[in-house]
Amino acid sequence: MRYEIRIAGLGGQGIILLGVVLAKAIASNEKLHVVQTQSYGPESRGGAVRADLVVSDEPVDYPKVRKADVLVAMSQTALDAYLQNLKERGTAVIDSDFVSPETGRSDITVKVVNATKKASEFGKVVLANMIMLGALTDIINLAPKKAIINAIRETVPGKNLTENLMAVEAGMKLGAVEIG
Image 1 (tube, rainbow, N blue to C red):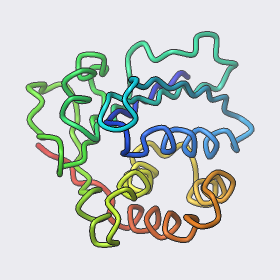
Image 2 (image 1 turned 180 degrees about the horizontal axis):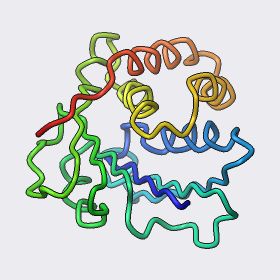
Image 3 (image 1 turned 60 degrees about the horizontal axis):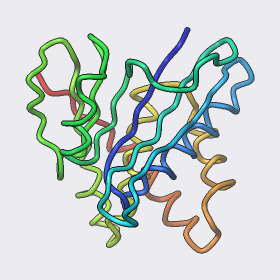
Image 4 (image 1 turned 180 degrees about the vertical axis):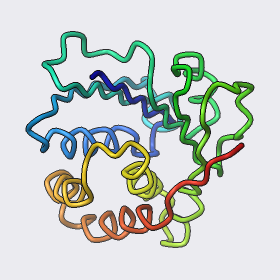
């Protein structure tokens, strides 16, 4: 089994943190191997950012995403750039506040998460990444809730820990809405 996840958006959205936490959570399963890579533009905010995860039940021989099973797009630019690399019958998970659900592809599933809208209810749109992570937990079903929580505890600094945990819990409850 080889399962590929691409998470993409803009600098400042917490894309890399989302990828790192998800990879740690998945890696807690001793039966799975996970490799996480990241790429970002030279801009500190607003540039293209991506985190790729390759999950396998065998050691990962090639750490790059070839054809994603899941594409998480938190910006329209990200969806436009990576949609062609999403497998047939793959799943696009989009933040509806920044991304149009119109993909032009009938061979994929599109799931909408109101991540930024929900994060704004916390008064911090920067928590949209944790809202998305919470919703993504049920979509990919590769790490249990407890592993996600533990990975956040290991990764997020103390002063931001409580709000990140609250946001991921909210995302788990929020879930995703499937389009078409």
